[in-house]
Image (cartoon, rainbow, N blue to C red):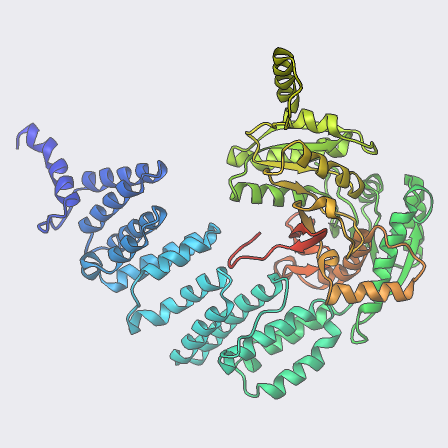
Length: 623
């Protein structure tokens, strides 16, 4: 063979494959496949989706009798979806190439790709890809139903996911595989219920078995807030759904888990600053702990609680700690102040600790030492995720002078960096002023517009009507301000022309149900404690008002903080980290981190007509 033939051979094969020639060599060359795969990956990296589709289809034609044929056709359909061509994606998965590959290879590849997309937190694309595929044949459907249900659960379609797994349950014949399928159903359903901010809905047309599963998940969700009420609720559920599949596969294990979360240690010491500078914060947390204790049903084992005053110095912490050990405390909640938390960690307490602040960066955490705080770090990361998702990566920040503001800016820069986001302007202000116009004009570069107006007026020799024109390159503004400052800053931002730029804020310490018309349009993160006006937390707030009618209603965030701190003790004490489910509680969605820290995720809300209104949660959203 001539050298020219050796060069042209692989290229001719690639050309025939791309043009869809029906006569293909039975064994494509490695060079041809590698060339096409490289071209497909390069086109996908550059978002040239049409070119990527052509390369992937050519690869599928080269590997018709191999598992790779199904994989390449799935990726071609995914590239078509990325280009917005839903019809093309369906045609690829339902055409002649799909028929030659066969459903066994196609759905094996689809199953693997859906698994990867879900792991990458891309449930919407997984759903679109699944819907583009043909309906599987009966011999394929039984295995694929599990993955299909997982995709629907990830997109928030809980009822659809339950129906699919219930259908699969009836197709299975072996008792062992049916048990595994029911546990799979329960795991997905329970997670959906716990992550939901409200009970799962039950449409009237829901199948009785599926209805029983969903109602059991709602009972389970409520049990994490008050486990003592679960036995009575379960008894009523059993009367309504006799011989339900969950009776043997789920409920025994469920009862064992819930019995553990209602068991407290016999003695709990709470170390708080109850005098001097931080006394009001300590008293608010004390109120929350007592409210949590009184709100717990008689079915739980309530501990004896000792409140010990730490003051605001290290010496006060040492006295309170020694007193807690003398009281034979089996668990410590606190202290609150960061220097005292670091000092307690150095002592390496012999009992578990739920500290109410974070350890300094780099400090080694002792065993059984947990950190739970209202630090804004979690909020900053959640704000950054929304900015990136909404393509609002470039913005400005208005922060108070001091270390707290500098820490916010550092955290936000770090969170935006992976998406190439930047802060185009950072302005620091002094709290407590009557006007922040100077700072806002600097933030928005309004001074440049004012100078141009004055020059034009001088040239014309007459006064002009002038509307300040802010800079046009901002996609967001983050205002870190207390409620009082925010009510001054927001109207001034609107006055200087920033009404079209989304303005974000951190969680606030407002009194629930209060009106703030000056804040209309502000996007904030908020605790369920403050947004709830009808159900669980509203009832707890009313109970607090009855117990302590003369207490001021300020620092409500710290009351919620204390409520959750007490509630977390059995969750941390009795369950291994891998078994601790995320919980919607008073301060947000709480989850256990690998480093002993409790992470929080809050609700999004927007001020309308003076009130903070919760944002609707789109299906499949992870906020």
